[in-house]
Amino acid sequence: MEKCRIPTGYQHPLSVYETQCAIEYIKHNFQKNLCRALNLLRVSAPLFVEEASGLNDNLNGYERPVSFDVPDVGAESQVVHSLAKWKRYALSRYDFRPGKGLVTDMNAIRRDEIVDNLHSVYVDQWDWEKVITPEDRTPEYLKETVQRIVNAIYVTSETLKIEFPQITAQVPREVLFITTQELEDMYPHLTDSHEKEDALHREHKDKVIFLMQIGGSLRSGRRHDGRAPDYDDWTLNGDILYWNEILDRSFEVSSMGIRVNPERLDYQLTVSGCNDRRELPFHKALLNGELPECIGGGIGQSRLCMLLLGCCHIGQVQSSVWDNETITACRNAGIMLL
Image (cartoon, rainbow, N blue to C red):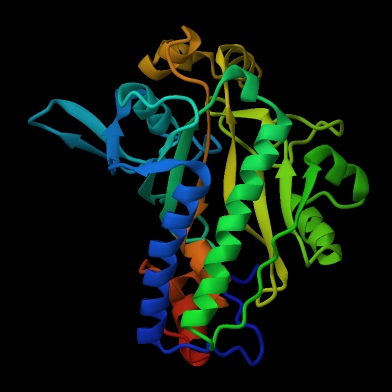
């Protein structure tokens, strides 16, 4: 598989300087729109956590965190993969109440990421988390929250094009909600999860797709995609997908969901073979009912900038490290990697 694909005839409408201005506009205005939509307060967040805390995101279970020792503290620390667990702990410590939440800039290093047009070892996203009540643990509440996020993205896109009329990227506002099992039933001849997403989205380019219920086994015995067992409830989560006209594929902007309660955590740790985590401080507190019910997710900052600006490579909107093949391909196409 090629690591970098530049669409034939691709040209970005903005100069490098104009692109930087547009990125700043998106990051500033989308965060305001998101906070207004979900009643969020911006807070500061850690770049790294103690390994023994159990707060780091395990992602799919095989990614290696970047680790280092802190001799003066006597602790091993890890650069975060995401803040999924830290945010829930912070909601409790900072005394957030139902209906209110937090948002923060999350900067992570994922050393085992396979880099391509969409993926980098550097991850930047808006990580958000909101306290809910037990009665809010429903698909309807999840869908309403998704629509609010989609509305915030749409408003940001429309105002961006007023400031930068050269930009022509269109983003829809209507959401198609579908489960991973429904997706599998629609395309039984396809085994690759991303091929299924692309096939569905080609039929619904004018819609945002929210693909629900990711992490558990489907009737085929396969999983659509991996999810750590200790933050999302696999029956109440999903990915927000947009059709990317530049790259001719479905494009994930956000992974989110209603978080596990003690019962769902107990079940998901068991079926995942992760019972050793029960003794970690975060997991003990959650199993004991000491942490609030909540909903949360991450929204990719570079991904959203790519989508709204019509970029074909993530290196156009963030600074990272790239292989020689990617550097050469972009240089030959007149694309500057930051």
